[in-house]
Image (cartoon, protein in one colour):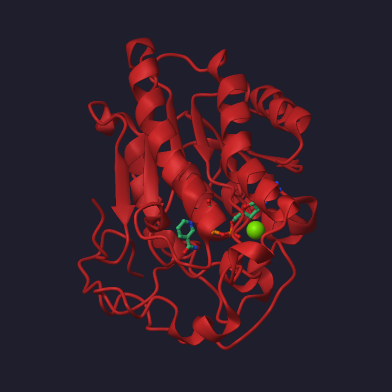
Length: 297
Ligand code: NAD
Ligand code: MG
């Protein structure tokens, strides 16, 4: 069985998929995505890089967050997973993979648009894990809308609530628990640099996440807490079929990248592992692009 360390051609490591038009209510489920995604269940090999670490990951039930949760567990970390209650099926699957790796999975469903929940989430993660030294702010809301006039206040505010306000509240609540050596990794996007015309609310949150990451990294550096970000390109996840993309765009999803294909969630995991592990001790305020070759500044 090949794993993420096997010498391979990145063009053909995963199939060039052409997803059929499909629709799921927000938030989508990995369990119903066609074709299914690779989150590393069968392929990610841990090498002890996060031994004994205690991580809280938001949006950990599916897509990129699920792949990061699996990788963290196989690298030796215990993981608290946050997701929406409607995503219990996906979350239970990932929790099972974490437990098979011999690590603890703490399930903490709840809505990140609720400010009180964001703060309670951190306390519950600390209690469930017996401490906290890694935070991955990965949950995100992306709804494609054709024109600015069609973005109502609720849509605008919900996108900012999940992508920005929750990141602020969770990070702030986590700080009193994070010892020196801890890490924070935020999920931003290539959309921070190349905004799609249909994603003005979403893309602008991702630019803000980059900026927040670089400012906070400097503030927390003297405390020995490192803050970084990962900027994925087009990755095949449930986000894309729950109105994240216009339906007609799905069959061509990811094909315009230099590699010519969409990325799979497990291809993101090593970037999060690197930025969380002490091997990246001199890397702060960095946004690591995982875009299939689409250029970023
Ligand atoms: P995904 O749908 O699998 O994950 C997003 C998760 O966000 C959901 O599983 C859900 O648990 C969580 N979420 C959304 N609203 C929430 C709320 N109100 N309360 C609690 N949780 C909520 O999709 P993904 O593509 O893996 O997305 C993960 C991150 O990666 C997001 O921040 C997204 O913006 C970013 N990203 C994705 C892509 C891509 O092409 N898939 C590209 C760039 C960036
Ligand atoms: Mg999900």
